Length: 124
Image (cartoon, rainbow, N blue to C red; front, side, top):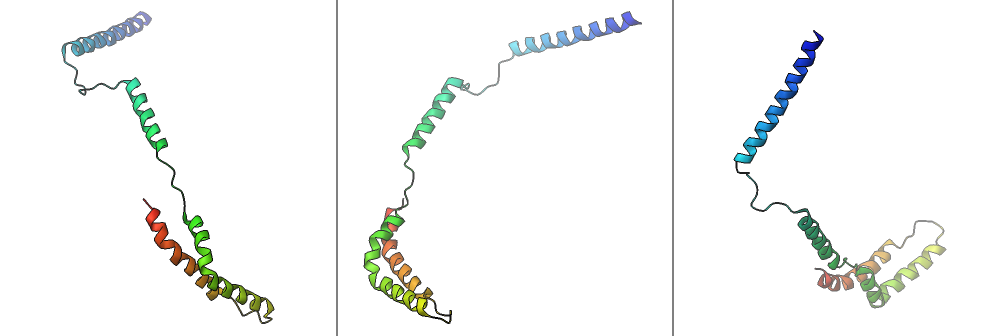
């Protein structure tokens, strides 16, 4: 019975080998269906390097808003002075109800109105 098992394993191995040989023969006879251009690993690496170089050439965007805000602050001196005067009054207030939110937003609004036209001209 052991010899029958061994011979059946041998027959199975022969069958597997025969199938592999048959597939190999069939693939040799039939034309391969491939893309017109086969992938070349060297070309793929070169293409990836070119793409990386193009990305490096593109400059990182620069936020010009803080620079423009500094440029516009001198034009908003009136609203800044009004805000400073308000903060002095609030420091002297003992009720705790006074605040300078309105004056602060007036100052920021002045800066934003000055910055906006210049900022949108620099956007791509």
